[in-house]
Length: 269
Image (cartoon, rainbow, N blue to C red; front, side):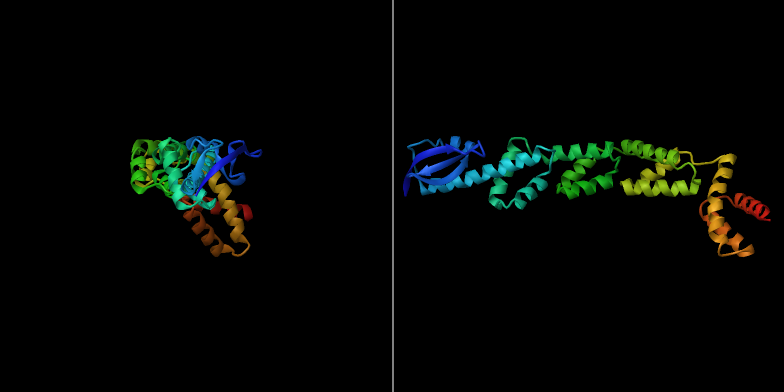
């Protein structure tokens, strides 16, 4: 059945949408882009099939507009945009059409997005490949594209960033023993997503040794805490054994531990 467009009025709340009246009665509203696409004017005759086509294209346009708004804040992956439109209850066919339009116009590009995410995670979070790959997976990036993008993260660059992290840790944790420091750095780099190969290379290039004064200061600080912890529960041989075991596990040389315990006994005596 054909009907005539008898009135077209712009909506007050949304200046980009128009109300369409057929045979003097309100029929539907459409986006300005769809109005132009179908050359809708007062007096034009349209049939029911055309109305259905207009409704479908308008739904695509609405979906497209919501996606653009979502993308205006920051770059997004195709998966993120798809999920957003799904949450807004657009149909799958409409979503797919909107996604294709976004990609065609250059608003959506998973390769560009993945490269940008890689650079951001390297520079701001100083993450390694394994951690970045998990981020890409969460964003729904195709596995083949993940590998392609991560391949650009060279081993030399990974080592450079990992060294920066290790050196910062050494500066911040200078009161820890080399053994404690090594464990902390290893755990931190693995957590950040670097491989054991990179970790090993880092340890080959950093200096963790301590001089005599540093050992004395460290065992004085950590040793007192350990001694006070066990002194309330043990005494004599048992106390010295517990303290010796605890300090040895922290990485203190046995001769430093013996000297510390001897000094504590003298002080307590």
